[in-house]
Image 1 (cartoon, one colour):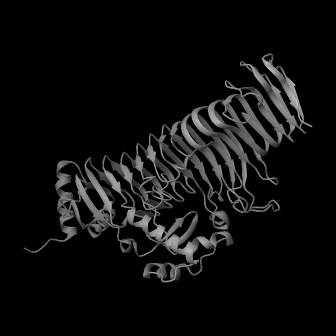
Image 2 (image 1 turned 90 degrees about the vertical axis):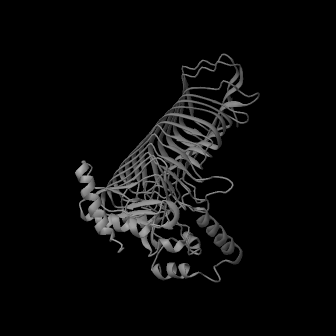
Image 3 (image 1 turned 120 degrees about the vertical axis):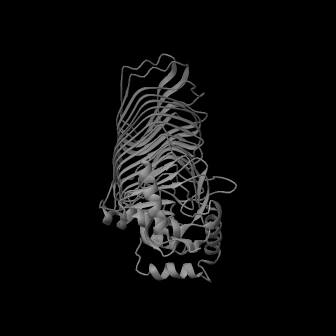
Length: 521
C-alpha cells in the first residue's frame, strides 16, 4: 500500500476534527509519530508545524508516550500541547541541532547549535499541558566537562571535532571583550532548551521541563511573555547539570512568571539584557517583569539580576516566593565594563531557609580583576531598589553590598527584615542606604556593618540574640548617618561601634545596653 504524504494525512485529520468542532488540532501519534522513544520524529513534527502555520495556526497534540526528536522550530499561532503521560524527549546527537542558528549565549550573539525549541520573529506561541519536556542533557554536560578540562590542561583544543571547526568558521568575525576571549576556546556552546528570539505573545504553562543542556527557558528580545505553573528540574548534584538556569528572560518586556517550582544546577530565575558592548549595541533592557508565587530549591540564586545586564534592567517586582536550599536568595551582580542601569526593583514577602551563601547580594565586583575607570557607558549603575517583608533562618550570611567608588550603589532600602544567620550584613560603598525595622541574629560578628556609606538611615534596628562583647552595628568611615528609634530589647554589651564616622542619634531606647556607643579612635 502506498504511504500517504504527511500533508494528505494532516488534511484528512483537519477535516475530521473540524467535523467534530475541534478545528486545527493535530495528533502527532495519529500522523505517524513513534511514541516509544525509539524512532526520531523531528521531520514529521517540523513539517506538521509548517503545514499548520500555512493553515493559519493550530495545536500539535502529543498523547501519552515518548517522542524522540531533534531541534523543533515553532512558528506563529502554534501551540504544543503535551497531555499527562506524554514526554517530548530530545536527542543526545549533537548533529540534530545543526544547521547552526543565531543564538544569544551568555549575553553574546553567535552562530551555534539550534535551541531545542526555537522561533524567530513569530507571535502567539504556546507550550502547554501536563506532560514533560526532557532535554536529555547528560551528553551535553559530559562533553563540555571533557572539553573544559582539555582547555584548562593544554590551553586549547588540539584536535577539534567537525562541529567545533564549524563553530570557528561561522564565528570568525565574532568580537568580544578581551576578558571573554578565553571562554571562546571551547568552540562548543550548548544550546538553550527554549530560546525564542524577538517573538511576541509567548505562553509556557503547566509542563515539566527537565535535563536542559544549558539555560532552560530563555526568551530573548521578546514581548508579552507568560510562564505559569511550570516545574523545572535540572540536577544540581550527581550528576551536576552545569549552567542549567531555570528561567532567564533576556532583553524582554512585559514578562509574568508565576506559580513555578524550580530546582536547577545554576540560578533559578535570572533577569538579563546582554553582555558588554554587544548588549549596549542591541540596546533592549529587560523591563516590566513580575515574579510571584514561586518556590526555588536547589540553585545558585533564587532570583538574580545580571551579570549580563548591559542593556539595563528596570521595573521589576518579585513577591510571595520561597527560597529553600539555594546558594543565594536575591542576588544582583555586575562589574565595570558591563554598563547598563538596574533600577526600580521591588522585592517583598519572601521566605528563605538553608541559604548556603548570602540572603542578599549586591555586587559590582563580579569580575574581581576590574580596575577603576572614568564614568562612561561602561559603568554599571544600581539604584532605587527596595526590599521588604523578608524572613529567613539557617542562612550563612545575611547580605553583602559591594559598590564601586566611581558609582556607588544608590537608594537601596530594607524594611521589615528578620533573619538568623551565621554572619550579618556588610555594606561597602553605597549612598542613601536605609534599614528599617531590621532584626538580624548572628553567630559571629556584627548584625550590620557599614564601610564608606554616605546618607545612612538606621531605624528600629535590633538583635534578638546579641553576642557577648560584640556590637550590633558597626560603622566605619561613613558620613551623614542617622541612628533613630532603636529599642534593643535584650541585654547587650555594645549597640553601636563607630570609627571615623559622622553619626547622629535620635529617639533611641538603649537602657539594656552596657555601652550604647563605642567610638574607636
